Image (cartoon, one colour):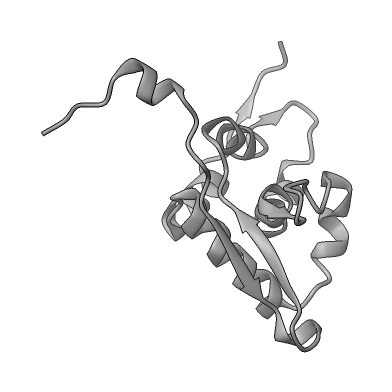
Length: 128
């Protein structure tokens, strides 16, 4: 058995990625879905922690769209979407979004329960 060293754990590894076919958008259309880093996962989860006066219910309802924003990339590895695209993504076919979400969960090591827990366990925290 070999145990990981500090250096091994501090050196980032290549993130999993999946090319997801989206036939609903046209023949041969696909999107690249890249797994989140630990920091990106924390940032994703923190979107569901509310500050006073924050519209938390809206963010909870947009959980799937938000994971699409976090994980979809272009061929150069740049994000395809920003948080400003969340509402528009919500208008896309559920089949398309769910296919991307499933790949995002796989590549990020996130189970369906993890995603639901991030959203359900959101809480309101006081302002700093």
